[in-house]
Amino acid sequence: MTLLCSLSWFVLAVSAVCGYGAVLSGVSLGASLVRLDPVEAAAVARVTYRMGARGTESACFLVGPAAVAVLVTAPAGPAGYGPWPWVAMALWAVTLVVRTAVVQPARRTLAVVLAELAGAPLASETRTAQLRATAGRLRTGSLVVAGLFLVA
Image (cartoon, rainbow, N blue to C red):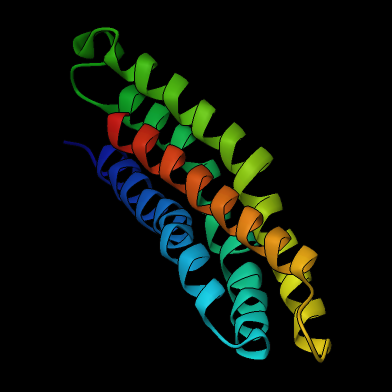
């Protein structure tokens, strides 16, 4: 195995662990934030949105190019793996779409709703229902991304 192939595997592993690990945290995050005090939940949501959605989750975008680099630099070449790498690349693209269209906006909305609830003396039923719906959307989107990642 060449140095370039080893480096490609390293980048693939690190980007997958960092990027998809941050997405998987959304599975437990949505459920746990609903049970916290609104002020504490707002602070946690703000930090996890900054660190997760805007920072660490961006490593997901490196998984595909790193996988292509692994295929190109592998001794057997891309033809040695059959159609499976391309199926995995298609699933990776779907995870990016779900992450960008569902998970990241849900985290942003969750942070905004929790910040509004933290400033209100009494939580309204509408905001509480919106909070539960957004947390459910975050949890569902994260589970879909996690499932697609595991299949890929």
